[in-house]
Length: 476
Image (tube, rainbow, N blue to C red; front, side):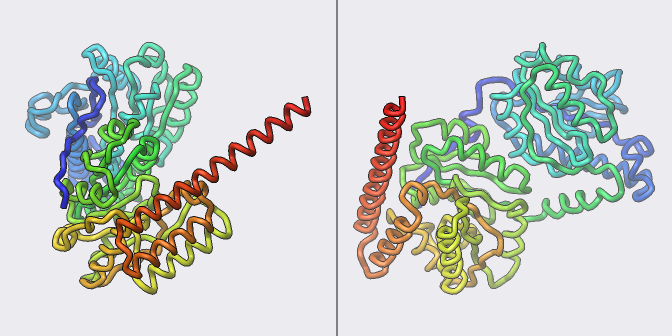
């Protein structure tokens, strides 16, 4: 496999960021009181303690240059907090006042310390992930405020940039009915009144009542699950990397590795903020995927195109599929975002091929155990049909699972070239390869055919624009 060059967060903006965790010292009878009927005072206290420790552990996993983690606590005292959470994190009392006053003070202190972007998170949502925090910080590049909505009508996260502080503080958090289902709605109204631009992350559940305890059980199960390394080969995919990061933000125990093949746009910069790792690779899908796999630490590898979206909870589906001792790899059903009859027929044919013949391509989000991937030597060194050749080898080692859930890819090339034209080109290329034509020659044919069709489409579009302009001129 190809040699790699990797860096973590190397393109993170050269500013100071702070994550501020709001919590209480765990004391029976004073924390999680609504859970006492179900867990008792000691049980509710222990759950609060474990959730706070989990939140701190999640924040520590970001580790970008310039990031500072601070815990603001209520109850207890400096020595008790230090003995609980350690001396390597900033510990400060929340101080007096309602929640809004205490959060406002935390923001003001951060910005007076020279911090440029600050996030405040609670400890009641065990579904917060490192990638979700990365995304929230990224939103503050273009927004004044970022909010993480909670299912109960509140929010589990609020972030602010220093430039927004004079406009937002203290008004944004004044007069909010804390502890009610109106918190998020009223905060958004306040932001609108103040002229603040707001971004939102995904909605998550909080654990406040006995009926919420299932969220904690799910979180505990995820801790014992295998890590999935999501490997994304990319060239000039800046916008798609942002959308992909939003798609992956709430998945537990995943790492995102972007293998950049020499982009000329901001792909590497954006990926440096939003991904767990960025690797710099030679251009070519096979070499980029292999380079990404070399940097992966997960027990499972998932190869994902930058313009492909997966269903919520996909990581659980993958782990469940690989629990079958006979299963060695798998993929999702093929779909695109083009809702036409012809495209649906093509999707149906592709999924029939995958289910009946086991022929899977990389746009179906191929997943495999990392040990087997390395044992097989990774994707073969060839410019086209590398995924077909690789999955052929995989099928010889065990069962390949086709999940009933869809990996939805962009139909941009289908729309540019033409749905049936591109399908015919794919069949010609595949047939030539199966008849023994070298992958280099097939890749050359494919490139020329695609470029020819794309040029034709551009000429057609130019002609239509010219004709439309002439008609408008004549009408004038």
